Amino acid sequence: MHNRAREREQLCDVPTPSDSVTNPPADSPSSASTFGVTMTTQIAIRTLRAAGFTITNSRGQTGTVREIECERPDIFGIPLLYAVVLCDAETPTPAVEYSRRAAERAGRTVVVVARSGGAGWIGWRDFVDALGGAVPTWRALDAGYAEVLADLAEMRLPTGIVGEPWRLFEEAVADGLEFLLGRRVQRLGGLQRGQRVADLLAQRPDDRLLVVDAKATAGKFNADWPALRALVEYVKLQRERQRGQSDVGAALIVAPGFRQNAAALSEVAGEFLTEAEVTLVFVPVNALQVLVRRLTERPTLRAALQWAKIFGRPGLLTARAIEREIAAAERTRVEREPVGVDRPSGPA
Image 1 (tube, rainbow, N blue to C red):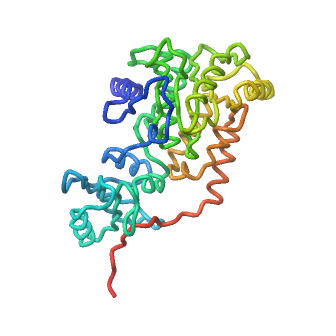
Image 2 (spheres, rainbow, N blue to C red):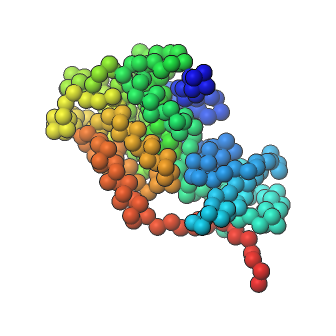
Image 3 (tube, rainbow, N blue to C red):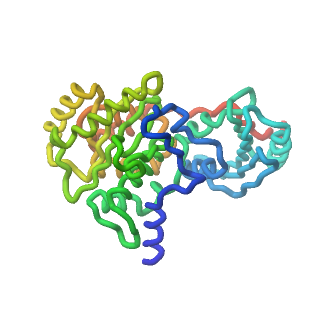
């Protein structure tokens, strides 16, 4: 029980300095770089592990070059050995060649990753995209995430966790979105009290922003028009700030549930679109739980989903709609081998 409580505490801790994004001032626009995930060994390892790789070793050759040895079984259960060589420079440095030769002698497939792609190596963005997107933090992948999310959504503090439930709920929602979208999420609501800002700002893979309002409430949230006026103002203000930057694609309300049925929520979403000129998506906690659970099972599918439909189609987001989109991605996705992968040569 003690260990379980500690897991929950870690799940809802605020991000550590090495993993967190530095939020810009509330009156500044958000650009694609605001949500980008920088190249770090920790994020690379988390992303590889989430994609089903087993990490067997990690070591540094120089200050800019790091090797990650990992493996994953093929369809016959035979381990495929890889060496991921991270080079924190625009193009690979001479030290990369030493790592490449050593890995090839050991019979490993070599993947060289630099900040930008080129002939014989891939860029950091292509690397994490090939794995379904970066995994900035582990918290959403914790076994207790779904239960903690549900408790906090209804203003219940799970055993062993100390803090304000509404703020911890914002953190938990942000953790889930970071895993799903593979990008950082700006935490604003709990960090900039008294200012006219949304709780969270996220970014879809199409670079459109998501203005997110996390509603922790004892019972279902009443999504009537008076309750949405503040969100309308947040969206309008963010749209003004985004001139010349990434556009606002949708607003999300994440809550334990909604008092209105799907038809009524569609009507409210129509009014919101007329007033704010942005679509409004109602995301019940169970839908977020389904997304995280299903994409934890198949993390590479994160890059195949049409997020503009999931987090962009107005009205209530249902588990059925999520399963339909995942099934379509599974049915039509064709895996490809990324450029920049060197296979070990076999006998002639």
